[in-house]
Image 1 (cartoon, rainbow, N blue to C red):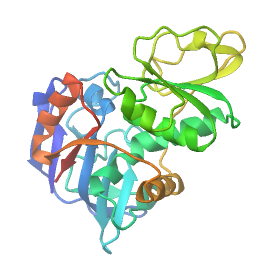
Image 2 (cartoon, helix red, strand yellow; image 1 turned 120 degrees about the vertical axis):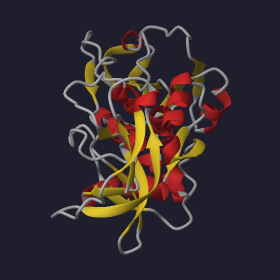
Image 3 (cartoon, rainbow, N blue to C red; image 1 turned 180 degrees about the vertical axis):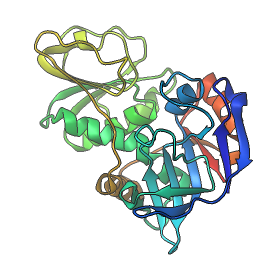
Image 4 (cartoon, rainbow, N blue to C red; image 1 turned 90 degrees about the vertical axis):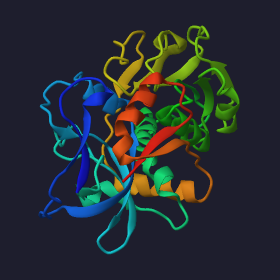
Amino acid sequence: MFVVEVSRFGDAGVLVGTQRPDPAPTPGRVPVRVTAAVVNPVDVVTRAGLIPGLTPPFVLGWDFAGVTQDGTAVAGLVPWFAEAGATGTYADVVLADPAWLAPIPAGVDPAEAATLALNGLTAQQALALAALPAGTRLLITGASGGVGGFAVQLAVAAGLSVTAIASPGDESYVASLGAKEVLTRGTALQPSSFDAALDAASYGGVLHAVRDGGTCISVTDPSTPPSERDIRVAKVGVVPSSEGLAALLSELAAGRLVTRVADRLPLSSAAEAHRRAEEGGLRGKLALLP
């Protein structure tokens, strides 16, 4: 099979295409022929050597779409850190635990389906961790991005009153996701103006915008502040969920959940995709097609 591996830590040029033997089936794992893999920010920082405990070469990639041996179209999430880099989606074939997978409904584009696994499940599980009642005033940062965009849609569907922070030029798109109010990134936040916050963008000053006794959920360790004023602070750690992913895919198929694919590139152009991701300004995810 063809894979793109991190040959050593460094810039995008360290991503090298190479041939490896197809993975042999093992108990509890099934081969999935990949049809689309997604480039995420975590891939970029991992490639650069900012994640400890890894030794190249290894194959990047968390979320993907593909086809099983019996012809079932599936999307999936590789728990990449838990796998310690032993399994990645920048490849023709992924040896997957069935618990990572969910069937893709007929008519759903594989590249769009692939974008749901990491970012959609993170948003879904962050909101479950927050456990907010309907009507809660919720601030969501990074609403132009994958996690934040899905979080806005899921929170609105759950009856929350959402204020979202969008990148300049993306305000109309984020408003179309159902946010009650859309702020532009860089807007100063008023103190204690929200019941809760979901920080999907390491946005400075989020905690002071949450009322005493409120809730703040982050998606990365660096963006998780120490608690103050009896605010419950927690970080979501995404895990594969067949049931959760199936629910997201069903919503996508029904048109109740939207996603954005900025571009589709061949897997062999993974280095170019990383360069574009680092340049910023993308509207949606980059999909790699084997």
